[in-house]
Image: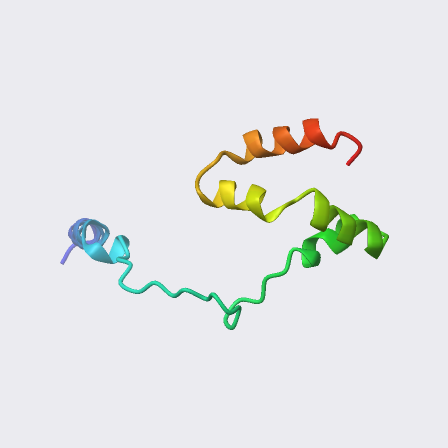
Length: 93
């Protein structure tokens, strides 16, 4: 087989692989980690890097980033809109 035929053959094989479902993974399982067993998430992990004072961080988490506010983003509210609201309400933070 000539080099050009080999290249052409490999090219067609590659195109076939890309056109199959192998290039488009299918989601067949969703895992809900409600108890935090698989992924340990706590906003303090991030906010400790932003605040030098633990008490200020706790106050911020308790008073500024409220649960109800977070639920709105989980429901699809744009983060830019949500941030603008908090910045207007708490400009000192």
